Structures are given as structure tokens and as C-alpha cells.
Length: 150
Length: 84
Image 1 (cartoon, rainbow over the protein chains, first blue to last red):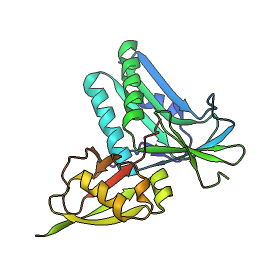
Image 2 (cartoon, rainbow over the protein chains, first blue to last red; image 1 turned 90 degrees about the horizontal axis):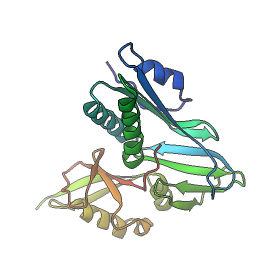
Image 3 (cartoon, chains in turn green, red; image 1 turned 120 degrees about the vertical axis):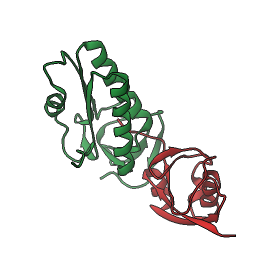
Image 4 (cartoon, rainbow over the protein chains, first blue to last red; image 1 turned 90 degrees about the vertical axis):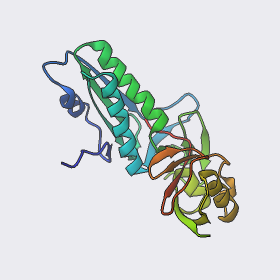
């Protein structure tokens, strides 16, 4: 069976993520959504364009989830990363983790988002309302992109 | 004698500043990742702007400057990551 890709061009459905981890044995469920936002120094962000090295994104995400399920063997974790243009307020990443108890569900969910930020080969180009664009990274870096944003 | 040929992939800001997404490099057979980075920065127009020690991946796995290369490898130059 072909694995379902972690990357998606469509909207991330929290309900689909929750359904994928739901079971009668798992009484605690944690959901994390990362959404496109205005940061304190960002100006008016209109949208973010996400690109990725997709085969590595798939391999790395699979590895992160496998590590999570080794550390919390009774947990089930699923995740999606959106690529392409993501408008303000919509989710770029969604992670759901369910386990028999809340502590493991929350720990597994937190582990996956922290590892995803460090390891996934994904890049984002912010488009501002004035038409300018900038590359942003997870270490706080911001570099102007010479291409116009619109 | 003999050497190896690798395919370099550039992404996001690196592709934007260099103006290319792929570059083929021919290197000595004992070349390490760091040698490939230096060769790319030295020989490809615009690539000198890339860091001396960028994040890299060999065949879709994170790698180090001291890792060896094999003929046919895909070496990806990864700008600072921004997933999530």
C-alpha cells in the first residue's frame, strides 16, 4: 500500500487528523495546528508560500513519527504539512497524537512539532500587503526576496 | 584516477540567488561534502554567496561536511529550515 503523503496542497482538516488517531483505547488526544500569522515585526502578512524538498520531507516526517511511536509505544501520531500558498489564518502544519493518557499524547505531539521545526526541509516566503516578499526561517532569520510578492 | 559526478540540488533562497535549481559537479573520487560545497561556490556563478558550511543532505538524509560522496549522489543544499 502506498503511504499517504505528509505534504498536501489542500487545507489541513483537524477533523481528519483526529479521526486518524481516535480509538477506544486512547483516552487522551492532543492536536497542534501551526497557522500563518502576523508576527510582531512582520508587517501585514498576506500569505506564505511554502516549498519543500518533497522526497526528503516525506522521509524525514516518517522518521520523526516512527521515533515518536518508539518513545510512546501506545501513542498514535499523524501529521500533515501544507505546501504552496497558505493564506493568513490557515494552518501550515497539523499534528494529532492520541494515547491512553494525556501526558503521553501531549508529549508525543510536542516532540513531533519540535523535531519538525528542526528537521523538515521546508522553506517559507512571506508575502506582505505592500507586495514585498521575504524568506523566513525557524531561527528568526529574515532575508528579502528580490522577486515581487504578487 | 577516476572521479565521481554528483547532482547538486538548490532550494528556495539558494535557488533564487544562484538562478539554478540543479548543478552537476565532477569531483575527485575521494571528495567529501565540504569539497563539493567549495567547488560549487568556486565554479558556479552566483554561488559564492552561499555559506561555507550550509545545511546539506545526501540522497535525502541530513549530512555533514566530512561525509564522503559516491558517484551519482544527490547533494542538496538546504537553506535555513522553516517548516512548521
